[in-house]
Image (cartoon, rainbow over all chains, first blue to last red; front, side, top):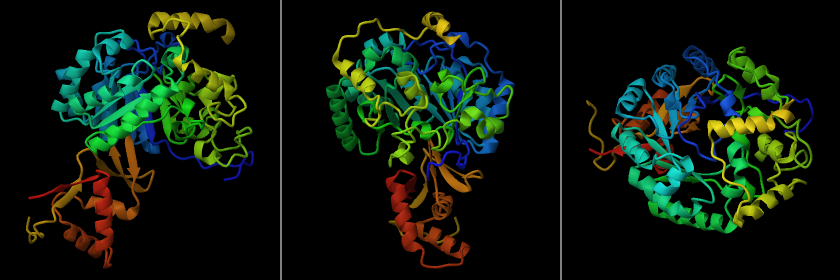
Length: 381
Length: 96
């Protein structure tokens, strides 16, 4: 493809719907992907709204469906939504912390046709798990894992990886084997929202990362295919950006709790895009017609060095949210790329990977969310 | 089953427990769905997997395909695909 401005790029259908049912969550993880101002978003979509979204997205071709949050189990209508989604032919994934998943609800979810459960742990040790989530949930999660297996669900164990647990990767893999997970996602922290606020606490040193990579490689060889391990090297350390969300508006549609439609969960804070709402627009209009979803499709928007870069079709210029958060310009080359003139920002962040942070860790809580809303108010005018 | 028994060593392939095979109109393709993932299948892979029901042997799948598409000589392709599908974990074998 050439990069002629204004050239039409064919729009592919959304294949993946992320339904963020709620921002309510009993856990307080300091790397949460929810927006900093989540406490200001209290106007959740109704059951009927969600059912309409599920139908409209399915009609466009969406087939993978993630019920996410917050903690989606805090929605009492989860079973009803799963029932509808299953009848529509979605493959339904529940992305949960485990809090709220008991014998009664898991039985109902099975009957509703739920296909898979992704259960998060924050670490392989009770101490770090319970510290990072600010809850006593480690033992609960282990009981929930047993419940998931007892009811015959495939299980993905997810663990967000950062400086405080990356040295436990070997034990985290043991835990995944112990609880009978089919897949383990070692999800290196991505620095948006709460994780960006807490980056100096979370970013590992290069030496930590290299040790973890070696452990994962060795364990993969030993485990054969009994447990599949996903471990993606964090883009800060790669020197090249990732193809974010498989490309803006190419594959993934996120609908946030209040109905705002986004190309990615983190995109909500991007300025002047006026993301459409499923309350006022059809999913078809949102995906194909809205200015926000078309803004970064194709290559016409790209600046140099992306515009003339042979790798532009591979990474599509990287992540717009990261470009905005780190450079202040959402149309800039993702600064994790070592060809970016602003790559120094990322090198400076990596250099803090073995330093003691200057500020305290800030947990994701409604109180801290309100503080960040206050702190950003003057600049938002 | 009414067909004659397959050779004792063959086993009968079926789509593995973690996967769901379905036709997707928007993609005009069969896809394999699994936890947080999807594989879009080409036409022949889709036709082979559709017949992996844990009842038919590889030989029966080949015969079935050759008759459905009025052709012959598919055995090598089917076997090669089933080997790949087994390595990827898409297919498991029922041995009786």
